[in-house]
Image (cartoon, rainbow, N blue to C red; front, side, top):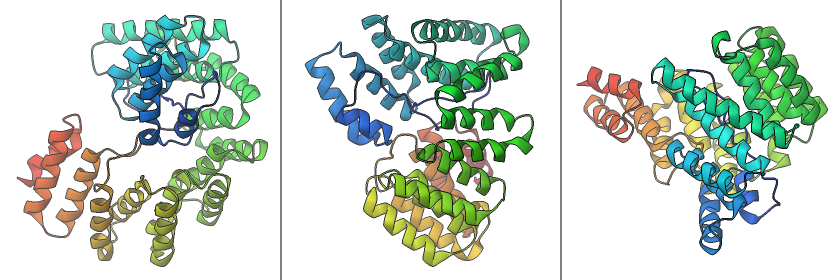
Length: 361
């Protein structure tokens, strides 16, 4: 996965949806990264690089791990090393494309800086497709660029949809996931059909089932179907957390507490080192203002913070921020301020946490 990155030109919107699937062969670390177990994979990858510093596959894997923790500077440097080591590797160039795309999404600098970065990005994407015309990651990245970028920077929605069509031919589930993302910005009436196509064409796709379920939850749609899609994903791979996260959010938002507790126990038994489902439940309680359950949300967030955060999961700073908001709702203003200040100190880029810290003072 990935991962990578889904990005919008000039807008900080990197979505943790996809992964870079290595083309160099499956290793234990590759499998762990594919299942989003970055913390488990990292020591294996670093050991491989200690044995062979120019191991291109391991360099790409390390870049993906660094990306998953939001360290784009390191991820870019590692991906660049992979490209320098194997310029003929489409996978190496695709990894650099994804990292540059993530940087472009979060770039807050001036127009000239963005244009320079976008030029590098497009150059790498074109090189990837030169090496592998059906590289799904480059197709996705260029489609997003063409869709979101202004015309003066090379934006072209018609070209974007051509690439989407090619991506669908290469990988139907990923292609329709991409189409759903782009349609959501222009014609939301098509999004449900996009995710349905993803599921129908690739019923064995974990991404398709969780994508459809998450869409239904976010859109306030058929939550019974969303629940069923989450369960299908869990059956496909019980070692991943996305299915459990989706169920946790559904049950918390609909106040089905026994089902929520059962889901969290299942998740903890299957994936004991990733407590993302607990964060999802706490977030749903907070978002839906379930006043009688703020203590439950607090418990989940404190539990979440007891372990190092997994890659692509909400950061510790985010968890402290949300915990502060829960404590505020419980009437514990001074303790809330401490948590929000901790969040702002851990991640100064969290503008909302900094704003809440000033508000609570």
